[in-house]
Length: 450
Image (cartoon, rainbow, N blue to C red; front, side):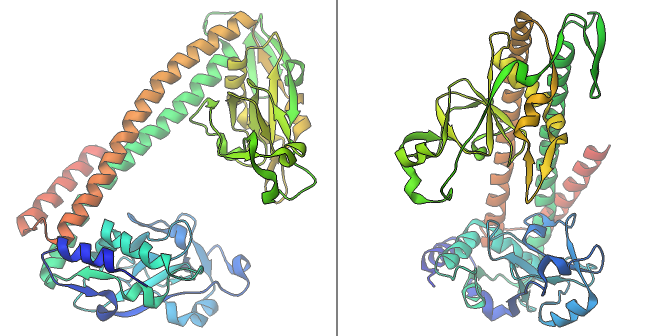
């Protein structure tokens, strides 16, 4: 393993002596998956922390697994203690870290989470902030580069370097960062709630427009549908297959991961290319060659494509000809149906589509049942008017969303920079700084809850 570049960069940036983690901890080690795997998990018992529970802003226990007391005792070497530092050492979340808070009680970890137990000269919160700092993350990932495919080992982690100011200074820095980062995290959470509210507002706006139109005074009639009480009197309620052709994707005769099928001239769009935030599919990351094309199917430009096996029910409009796997369906509207209106209508009906989904190894939409669903259709000129209205509204929403996302990015970058400055000593923290940060955080909490 080599950490020369991160360690030299750290030494140049900190005003304090730098030392290896292993010289200041009493334990570095990860747990195991209990025998029986997920079958050994319970709804109550001893919490077993997995990588999805470990986040930079603390432990998230909404989906925590539980193990029996007997299993906990069998895993005695990884029983948690308050103030243990936890670091994800495998998978997509490698590098995420936090600590076990006081009063947590009994707990354990699986093989994806490493316990780092500092000794008296290394404050547990200070160590957590060091590992989450940019150069701390650099060392984690540089260690991972040379590690086995199973993840980081004790030897790799022990060689990571951290600055070591006097313990009172570590405690002061940690207290200041606790208050400052909590304020930043609260601001980010508030921004994310704004995004969630915009999603709810958008869904409501779409549903109202495609089921009742834009004229709130129009006469209504019963729709005959269990999910929609009334529709404008001059609208028709028809099966989807009566208003558009349905094209099933195709990918047969060979394993989908066969490399002999790829890297050719034919665009190949997959379920991951559909995102709820984008109306159009304008790019692709995979192509098929002649052999791949022969076992797939080409959808025409202007198809409304729907995922039926992953991110089930999500839709987008195809902006070019492309091949599709059998996990997707194309809807090509007839002359009476506006493509953009159909897009918004299918977004509004996602929940209805999911009612006819089939659960096998994963959730799947039945291709035939999609077309047999009934939906409201106004005259085409009104469809076009509704689509233009929604396009305009969503352009406004997208501008707001972009602004909020930029604010989240700025806050997140500031959090990282603040941690870096404090733990390296570039920003010296006094008791007055700690008191001001705590008072500001308390004021911000009152403002958010009041």
